[in-house]
Image (tube, rainbow, N blue to C red; front, side):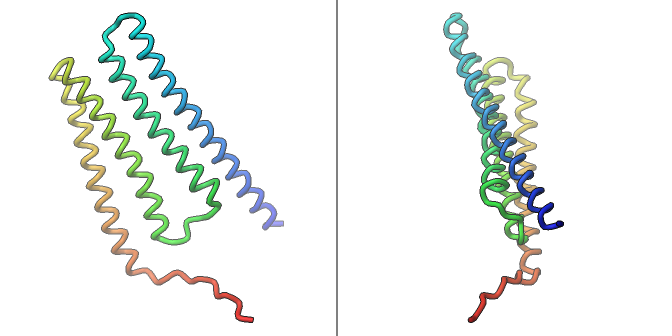
Length: 166
């Protein structure tokens, strides 16, 4: 009874993660389409393309971050059908996810720098804070990796099932 309930729960969990991944992928594609439409609309209306393109780049960067999360969910939670069984696996998965966030925030900060630098130099304060936060995120990640790898060395080796010797 309990085994059937557990397998049903795991199936439902994989379906939910799959649906969430597909929804995030669709949203990511829609964001790219909106970015393209906005640039196209600005070109047709003879508006300056510079700002429309910067906004479009920002939207595409965010959409790529959303797509990376969708890809992560699909690969790690749906297709692999595994649980995190070791500290190394947990560290690698968390690191991959955190790096996705750092890259997205860094690219967004650079887009803000380009936009603010061409409009009003006083607006550079906000992207500078964002780049400072990215730096803190990177230092935090480095510290996490250092501490977790050190702690990992102190853990006993995980037991592996013995092969049947018949």
